[in-house]
Amino acid sequence: MKSNFYLIVLLLISSAGFSQPYNKNAMGYAISGNDKIARKDYTRAIEDFSMAIKLDPEFKQAYENRGVAKFYLQDYNGAIQDYTKAIEIDPDEYSTYGRRGWAKFYLEDYSGAIEDLDIAVVGSKDKYRYFNFRGQTKVRLQDLDGAIADFSTVIGSLSADREQKSKALYWRGMIKIMVGQKESGCLDLRRAGKSGFQDAGKAIYIYCSN
Image (tube, rainbow, N blue to C red; front, side, top):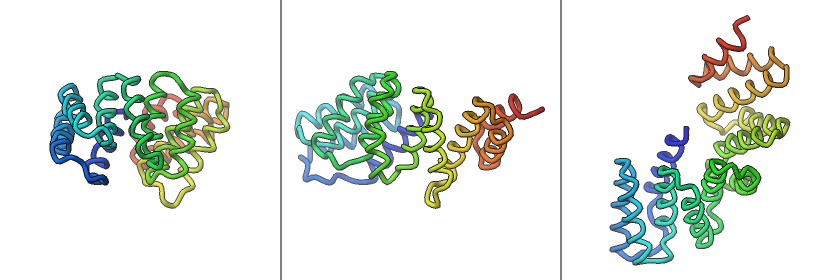
């Protein structure tokens, strides 16, 4: 799940183009860094993004993508530092808060993750992904009612895509089973399975066979 999410992030950043009039040499290093991430050469990608930043210290996307590369290398603190710098340059880029929140999640800073995800779900174009992330984070904090509310928001949305709805159904179903609502939980798992969420099949076999 982690690698798929950050590949999507990279593609979104790359396809969005560069919104500032960056130094052409800095842009060249950034493009090279993106290519290296696509080839999973994360260490050398970081070197390229670092050169881009050296040439243009306000190059927001270079910080953003360097954070992605650091995340892949499990340098979550480093990723958070880069996302924080990107936010300082452009505090209205809501998705950056979401990415920083996800990095905090992997550091088990769940409360800090919630703070960032609260912002991401307000303004990010990909807000339903962040509703799902926030729901998973609330599970870690034992806020099961809050988690169910987030997953239900995704499930009930007309604009959330099939992938996000299937994930939300899976997680909501697992929570319901956890709190003794087996029948309703298994219904959610079956809906998740029909939507193509692979983990649902195993969960159905374990919890819903009888």
